[in-house]
Every structure is written in structure tokens, then in C-alpha cells.
Image (cartoon, rainbow over the protein chains, first blue to last red):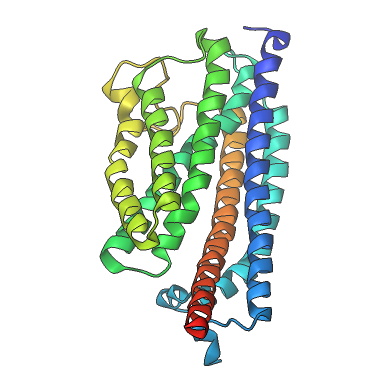
Length: 56
Length: 246
């Protein structure tokens, strides 16, 4: 059986890469949502409305 | 609420708003339990502590393939039934599936070095998984670079269905060819060959990653619906400005 010291670098690297990629995915969906909400808000402030909302 | 009602993006957004807090809570709880169990799981008698990489590698491999299966169902919805949300679902799943396929390849490589003595070998399982990542990148390029979103979506749907042929190749590659990658040890006739003390953390981590995938997918679908609304409103604004200046 291999010793832990020789393996720890690979284990830590695997968890670090996974945490980084998952964090990037979460940041992407959250920041994208914030940015889209802001643009939608700006358009509505300028009086642009979708056809679907005109009937509401 | 009937399933067909979800075809309405506004109703779908309301449903997402209701289920997201529960999904986020379930994801966090499952990760806390799964990571605790993974840390405390025993080492493998042959692979030692590197077996802990399995708790990331196997769920991400499953999600890479599940993502493509989901996109294939969405591609059918786009091409055959023209379901309003099918294209949204396919486009939203692509980057998430690509990310998990990337995690699978990197963690597999980091697991391979201490156990096989190499980071990479061109065997059937590893190569077919790399092909899956390239297919994901191809579909994303079609979605994001097409000038006409409708044509881009249809082209991406066709590529997705063609790429679905790779899924059985990935699954059975270890049976059809002599590979360095081990054969199936979980979903097999006669039950899993993994000891319960190692299997249970893997099951919980797989559930946690699946919950994370569903949560991110619903959030990305919500974003895609908003993006299409922004595009429609910007086109209307441009049209109104053009008419006013004419």
C-alpha cells in the first residue's frame, strides 16, 4: 500500500480543481443572472415592454 | 400543474423560484454529509488514500454523461416537438456538463498517476470521455457563435443527437476493449464490488453532485429565458428607433 504523504498532493489537487471549477460555475450563473436583471430593468425603465406583458 | 403548463416560460420561472431554495438547501446538506463521510472513509487496500479521489471522479463522470443524455432529450424536443423550453434546457446544460466532464478528466488523471503510473493513456474509456468534452465544446460553439439563434439551436440539436452515440461507447468501452481503466464496479450484474464503507460516501457524494447539477441547470435555464427576453426587447427598441427616424 502506498503511503499517504506520497499521495496527498494528488488528492489535494483533485479536490482543489473540483472546488475551483464548481465555484466558477456558481459565479457564472449568479453574475449572469444579476447582469441580465439589470439590463431588463434598464429596458423597462426606458419604456420597452414585451408583447406578452402588454396584455397583463 | 400539468407538465405541459411548464412550457410557458413565465410559469416555469415561477416554479424555479419556488423550488430553488429547497434544492440549494438539499445540495448543501448532502455535500456536508458526503464530504464528512468521504474524509472518514477507510483507505483502499491497494490504492490507499487515493481512493478519496473517486468521490469526485465518479459523480463528475456520471454527470458528464447525464448532461449529454439530458441535452439529447432536449434536442429531440427542439427538433421534433419544438417545445419552447427544450432549446433553453439544452443550451443551459452544455457548459455545466462540459465542466463536470472536465473535472472527470482532471481528477481521473490525478488518480491515474499514483495508481497506474501515468497521467494519461489513450485507452478507450479515457479517449471516449475526451471526445465527450470536445463534443460539449462543439455544441457550445454552435449555440454561442451562430448569427441566427434558431439555426444555431437546430445545428446544436443535430450535433447533440449524433454525439449521443458516444454515450454507449463510454459506458461499454471497458467491456468492448482491453483498457487500463477498470471495468464496471457499481452498476453491474450481481451488485457492486465496492465495500459498503467506501460505497456509501460515494452514493451520498453522487446525490450531492446531482443536486448541484439540477440546481445550476435550473438557474442557467432561468438566465437563458431572461437573455431571450432581453434580446426581444432590444430588437423591439431598435425597431421603434428605426421607425421613429424614418
